[in-house]
Length: 366
Image (cartoon, rainbow, N blue to C red; front, side):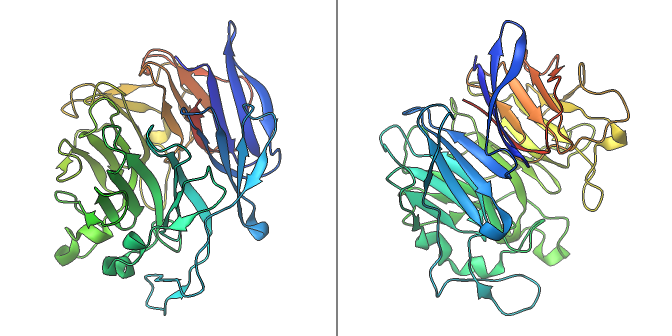
């Protein structure tokens, strides 16, 4: 099991280590700064932290000593002619980097390769550990992108990047709101793959429009990469053919709405969700923070709450706020109200970190 946990919060990156007495804060980086997410590169041990500094913009930091020291590297940048549609009937506006919303490594055969999904909807590639970035124009220049729109933000964004462990050239990305896209040639060409998804928030004639679907988060089973799970704005979907088609999973209790999803690294039918009430409320159902787990591919679900706060508790978990380690046994969830809970038995029992933290944006096992 992983004994290091990176917790990205509104006020810094908290590095937790697991000892005999449980989890404890080892040190904090960027105290006071908003950290959107962190990435631990298992290929070479490098850590990355994406910062959202408001007036000072998005920044990217890299560490080679497990977060003791950091070096600023380049961030993705749009060109002067790049524009983004806002979906509100106004003319397109110049594209500028607002947020690094996802960071993933390339394959083991691609040393130095990183992928970054951003607001406003661009995918970027680095082949030198973040020293420089290139916009993946084959996706950016797709005509369907003009129909993408923001889901929670004013502009669309790429929050999920899945690299097939069998073939590093095979990529899948999820866009809010722009659907799921696949490339089989290292990003040189793309096709939208949303068959079976539907959008209840659209007029009936556009319900099945693939390029306006709102996947909140997409994850891929490392041991069975053809299986992917999506927590969508109005449901949960599963694919067993590499994202070519999707099946609605309506049995999630107590709600099919949420942001976070995690999948077991070797058991494709085992997945976890943190349900909530959708749209303007965005709170746990009935004021109870719970985790929903399926072990049979979504045919049935268990509601797990042992060790989670007693009712009422209005902790919400963002899309990157649920993590599953490489063993598939250890889990972590972090909430918008500064709660952090871990489990060593796939969610059957949870234990709270004694310290209250700033609002949590993302949790990552290292």
